Each structure stands twice: as structure tokens, then as C-alpha cells.
Length: 197
Image 1 (tube, rainbow, N blue to C red):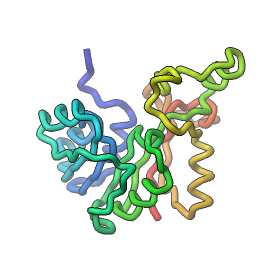
Image 2 (image 1 turned 180 degrees about the horizontal axis):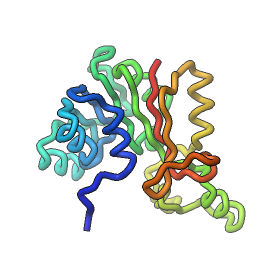
Image 3 (image 1 turned 120 degrees about the horizontal axis):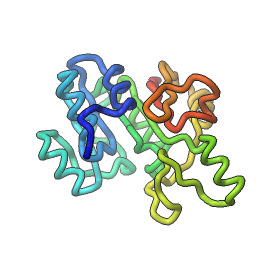
Image 4 (image 1 turned 120 degrees about the vertical axis):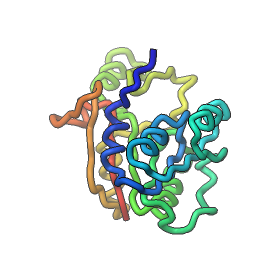
């Protein structure tokens, strides 16, 4: 049975979005986060999703969602046309991360990104002792059916932002619905970042 209480990452994202904001969620899935933002923040929300079943779920929630592949770009959107662009657990699934990030930073005044941390200690242990691609709560797929194309750590992302002149305004490290402050690249399953350029 699915809980009506939003997950910690969704609650943090909702806390970052100011009331009445315009939001574009790239890879919005079945729309739980968009629905939360529309309901609690009175945000003007729109999603882009490639999976037909997820789009049907969004429409059933009364959400505006376009069928599209975010890897093909956001050319139809003007610069800074949204207050926030969100990639919640979708960045690691795109083919062209740099192009998607560049477009997201162009279209959004701020970008919120979360992704599973491949450097989480359980992943490291599985690779070291079992010699196999890890399966963890934040990386729950076997190697042959994973939607993830890129496996990055939070340290990788922080370093990337530094090299590309991307400002990290806020960062959160999460594990089992709680915040992690001690050695987050080792002990957090999910990294969540508010960035701008």
C-alpha cells in the first residue's frame, strides 16, 4: 500500500520551490512530485515524460504533461521561462547529460537535481567483495534492466559543477528518509542539489 506522505526528497524539493512558482519537471514519472507542488505550493506545473503509462497517470491527476524525450533538448522553451526545472531521479537516465544540464540551466532560473549515489558504501562493498554491479535501495535494478545510463557519485557531481562554473546553492544528502551529514559520499544513497548559473 502506497503512503500518502511524500518521500523526504519530495518534501525537500517542495521546500525549495517558492509558492506560485512555475515548474518544469523533466522525466516526471507518474506525477507525484508535480501533484504535490501544485497542491501545496500552488505552483504552475508542467512535466515531460517518455513513458506512456506514466503520462496516463499524470493526466488522471489532472496534470499537464507532454510526451517527449528530454535528450532531444528543450528548444521550444525560451530562456528562463520557468522558475525551476527539476530532474528528480532522471539525470542518470539521460544519454547526453551535459546537453540536458545546459538546456535545463538555460530554461530554468534554478535547477533542482537528485540522483542515486553510486559511491554509497553498500555499492562499494558489493563491487569489492562480490565483483558484481551493485543492487541497493537507490539502485534497485540488475545491470541488464537498469534505466540508468550513468553512474555518478555526489563527489563527481560537485566536481563537475565546479569545473563548469555551475553554482551549487544548496545540497542535501539522504538515506532511508533521513538527512546524512557525516561522510555523505559514503553514507548517503541520494544527493539532491539546487543549482544555478
